Image (tube, rainbow over the protein chains, first blue to last red):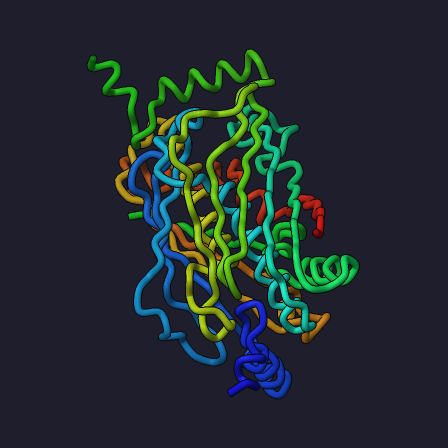
Length: 189
Length: 189
C-alpha cells in the first residue's frame, strides 16, 4: 500500500508511466494515436467543437462517456459577440497546457515533487495579415512568449532542466514552433 | 432600417467589417493586437487557463466582463483523468474554429449567404516522440486533415473559392502550417 501511494508524484502514477513506456518499447504499434474534433458553425464568429472519440493503442478509445464541447468566438472589435475565446487564444491555451503537462510528467519521472506551475503566454499579431490588407504581414502571431514560474523540491538548475526537457518533448510546442502539414478537403451540396 | 438588416450576412455585420478594413487601412497601428492566456497547474495532467484581457487598436480591451476558463486534461491511457480535452485536441479545435470563422467572414464580404459549415479534423500522432522513446519520431502530429462541408447560395466553385481564401487568411492555419517562434522563460522560487 505504501508502495502504491509513493508511486504517485505530482498527481501522476509513475508506476503506470513507466509501465506505459515499457509497453510501447515492447510494441511500438501501441504508439499510434489519432485525435479528432468535429466543428459546426452557429452564426458569425460563433462555432462549436465536439471532442470525444480518439484512436489509441490499436483500438478506438471508449473511455469517455461524455463529449467535451468548446465554443469559439471573437470579441466585438473583431466583429463577434464574445461567444468564447477566439481561435488564436485557444492555440495559446493549447501551448501552455501541453508544456505544463509535459513538465509535470517529466518531473514525476525524474523524482521532482512540484508545488506550483504557472505560466503566462502572449502572442503578438498584426491583423493586417488576417484581414487581407497586407501580403507583407503574416496572418498568425509574429512571436509567442511563455513565462513559467515553477516551484518544487529540487534545486533551480534541476527545475530548469525539467522545463527544458518538457519543451523538447511537448507535442503542441513542436507543432506550434515547427508547423504541421494540413490537408484541407471541401464538399459542397 | 432595411439597409441595416441587409448589412448583416452570415451573422456578420458587413458595414462594420468594411468600416474596420477602412479604419485599419487609414491607420495601420490599429492592427497591432496581443492575445494572452494564464495557465495554472492543478494536479497531474489537469491544468486550467484563464483568458480575458487583450490589447487591440492602441489600447487594452475592456469589453469582456467575465474571463473564459478552459480546463485541459488527458485520458486514462495518457495517465490523466479526463479533466478536459488534451492540448493536442485543443489545437485541432483552434484550427477548425479559425478556418470556419475566416470562411464565414470571407463569404459575408463576398456576398455569399451560407446555410451550413461543418468540419471534421483529425491528427495522426506517434506518441513515441512525446514519450521520449524515439528521436526519429516527431512529438506533434505527423499530418492533420480537415474536411469541410459547406452549404450556401453560391455555385460550387464560389464556395470552394471562399474556403481557399479562408485558408490563405486564417491566423491559426498559418501558425499550424508554418510555425511561430516561441520564447520560453523560467523563474523558480
